[in-house]
Amino acid sequence: MTECSRSDIPLCVDLDGTLIRTDLLWESLLTLVKRRPASVFWIPLWLLRGRACLKDQIARRVQVDVASLPYNRDVIEYLRKERQGGRELVLATASHVDFARQIAAHLGLFDGGVLGTTAARNLKGPAKLKALQERCGSRGFDYIGDAHADLSVWAHANQALVVTDSPSLVSRVKEAAHVGHVFDRRRNRLRIIYKALRVHQWSKNVLILLPLISSHQITNVSLSLAAMVAFVSFSLCASAVYVLNDCLDLEADRRHPKKKDRPFASGELSIVAGLAMSLGCLTASFTLAALLPPTFLIVLAGYLALTTGYSLYLKSLVLVDVIVLAQLYTLRVYGGGAATGIVPSHWLLTFSLFVFLSLALMKRFTEIRLMSHSDRKDVFARGYRTSDAEHIASIGSSSGLIAVLVLALYISSKEVLGLYSNPEYLWLVCPVMLYWISRAWMLTYRDRMEDDPVVFAVRDRNSYIVALFIGIILAAAK
Image (cartoon, rainbow, N blue to C red; front, side):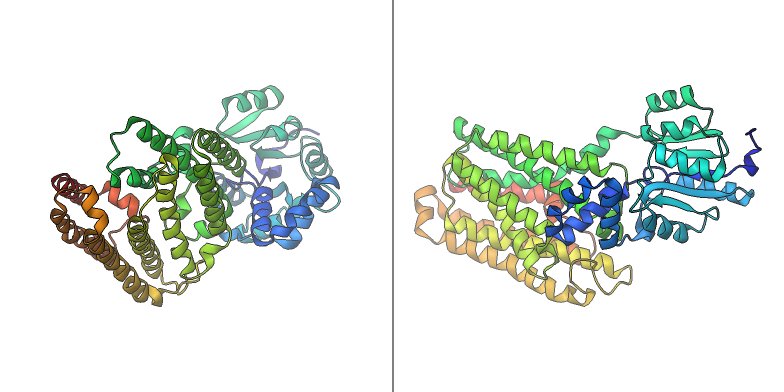
């Protein structure tokens, strides 16, 4: 067949990684596992019957919110111009045909039809090429794709259009076909990975040092070294869970005003990369944990189990979610004690529980207020309503004040006499803490609080001043 002019030849478009910046198979698979955990036992059986069967079975059980998917805007803009010029557009994808039809209907661009995977055929590589040749003839179509699996299709296309951040892929396509256009997706991958791991959240794990500080053994080199190993181990475990949570929470994150820009929700990182990152961090975390006492390994495993349970289910339970968050903070204190052999006092644990409950409620209040500005009555997947904001604030501020009360009772206890020579100075810590907690809640009401109050404290100049004052008071009391 002789080459036609571009306006007379259909433009066939891949879906995953091309039209959208994600992979629907992995997204729908994780959605299925999250909503129906028992299905994990069926997945290998479906896969044994072929990828077409796997995709079909998943599509029967999962709905995709096509409106919130991370579309490749450059590609869509290009397709709109081509369609306005009279070009026939065909969506040809290895994703299930039901998902593809929903996306085509949402975009309203593909008047040339939709080709996708069915229960009988997985439309990928040679199978996709055969389907396109049956429809358009040999070299009777242009093709936009993004992966090495598309090489056989490009090789028999009239013209190749490539969506990629890989120069080597472009070179291989040029060897096989005439490349008409490259949609360059190169970006700073290290910066994106750093963002996905949420390294800035590692500041929370400074709580591991609290047992060491409160027992006045921070100058003990061996114990401090153990605490630092525990800090890194907890941080890597936390990053593993953050990444897994983001991969499992894509739909909810995309509906959130800020979370929609996270690397996995926005499609900057693939789900496969996320799962590999999570596994790598988890392996490194438990390898380091093996260097510490067995009790630390137990605490770390408990943290992993609780935070995974939070990601999968507990965060959807009203009020249970914030209590679990407070416990996750407190587990870090337990972890510090387990790593160093210093048993945290019940005073420290009680104080921590109420402080972190206040911060967890502050986090949820901030999210509710943010969603209220978008005129939504419900916070998606959380179970809260915007009308709950005042009640949440009431409980949260009260918890912060109770924490200061626990601190005051501790100062009056017998334990203090054995640790401080001038314990009366410790009373000055109470008004300083009252100031910090009251100010944090005031900033929250003014919509000036970060998504995470602990991260806010790390970035807030006044928090450092408060910490300095408390440090001076503790030094004087000692």
